[in-house]
Image (tube, rainbow, N blue to C red):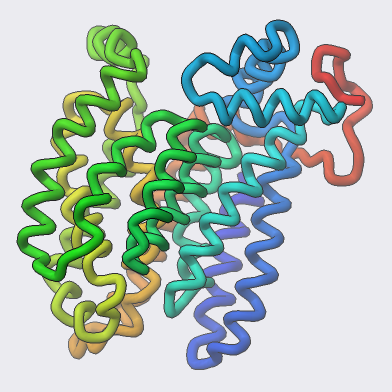
Length: 360
């Protein structure tokens, strides 16, 4: 677990050492982006879903194109294409990480501090998604592209990215509720419309995915719930509260182009809290989609004209996240079982592999 903690704090101290040197930060950002991609894409038997997605690989190999008629057809098509070209299962992790980091990079480039953005998404989002839940990780990458389209007020692009994301992970459809809010300058109406639209959209997503039976089963079996969901959502709620109470007006003056999406996402983060108390599985799944927007808010704090305690506000979110990360990595049985030790196949596949792994 030391490697994960070391990566976070090294990146944090590098960022702090480059305060006032924007060109150097950009250069370091590019290097860090590549290193984190390699760290995620070339892992070997790391992540709780390693075996689960290996089963996906086996299902496509066994049943072929019949799976194209299931939900999330693009996901199954990616697997089929890789198999057609004789790639082995680990390359599926490479492709999903590539999609994720393309989206993350596109959104990070829109921020004043892209390096700070990467640091925020590493401990929770990168480790849990492209390094474990790779299908939703790929969908999050496409949703990040949708966020960029939202900020640039390009509704057609927004719809394309959301629909594509839903063909990998159907839960992405919930973001269709944001589409009618792209145009228009009345923020109060946009917030009201968002709250009105999000409720039926959420219900629709749950129904069409067939997840409702699993949800009811999980509600009757608390041990199967997403145990860390409350803590992840609380971090989002704290970020949202800080933005709405302290940053919102200043943000609108300094960063008007992203003011609407920052405000709407903050309300979305707050709405997650009661949802996660009803079903941590659903709340947790949606929370991961909002972490890039949380990173957007946090990474831009130091660029806002905050008079009192500005250095504290700029550093505190990273320290809080680092504290939560250390506690998780140290005391979580889940983390120890899934992520320790870290292994990679970038220098070649380990010799002790089984034929079922599908490695050529």
